[in-house]
Length: 84
Image (cartoon, rainbow, N blue to C red):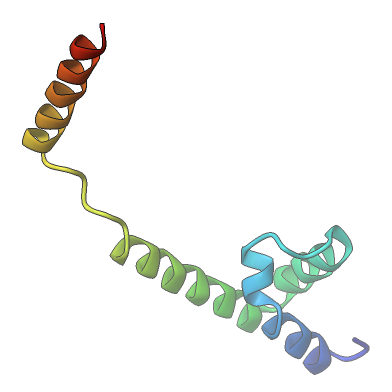
C-alpha cells in the first residue's frame, strides 16, 4: 500500500466488508484514513451506501394490515380461553 493507486485498489476491494463492519480495526482504520484523504474513494463509498440503502428499502416487507392483526389476536385469545 505504498502508493495512492494501490491504496485506492485496496479500498475498492473492501468497500462492502467495510460497510458491513467485517474488517478488523487495523484495516478499517487504514480505510478511514484513506477515505479522509481521497475524495474519489469517499465518493465510491457514498455511492455504495446509497445503493445498499435503496436495495434494503426495496426489499423491506410491507406491514401486515390491521385487519389481519385483529384476526390473529382474536384467534390467539380464543385458543387461550379454550386451553383454560
